[in-house]
Image 1 (cartoon, helix red, strand yellow):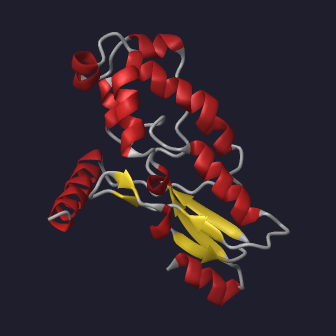
Image 2: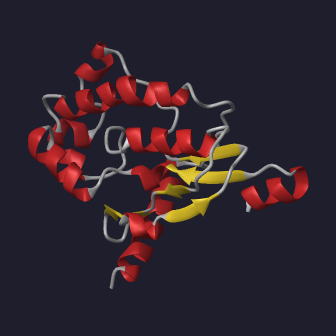
Length: 181
C-alpha cells in the first residue's frame, strides 16, 4: 500500500523489502545448529539472515545506471525455507526508495559483561555457556551494523505490549500451519 501511495502521490518509485525474505536457507541454519549452537536452527535472531544477499539485492535495486531487472528473494515460512529463485519476485524495475522492515532491525551488539549472565529462562536453560548469545552478538557487530549504515531514515512502529506481539506471532504461526496442510 505505502509503495503504491508514494508513486501515486509523490512520483516516488519504492519497493518494500522484508528482512524475513533474507533468512538463511533451512540447510544453512541446520549446519549452524550443528556446528555453533542448536538454537540457530530457528530463524529470527541476528545471524540467521543472509546479509550478503540482502546487501547485493540493495546494491542492484539502487544502482544508478541499472540496465537489468532485479530478482528479489522470497522466504516461505510455512516450509521454513527460502523459495527457489524461480519463485522470487522478478522484473523489479528502477526504484528511488527501498523500505526495509523487520523485527529487530536496529538492534545493537551488547558489551561482553552484558552477555555474561543469561537474561531469561531460554538463555539459562538452552545457552548456559553463552555460545548462542556470543554468536548473535558477533553477527550484530560484523554484519548488521554495516547494514544499518545504509539506512537514511529510521521509523519504528511500537507494539502496544510484548503480550500483543506474542499473540500476533501465535496468529501468524496458526495461519502458517494451516497453509502448510
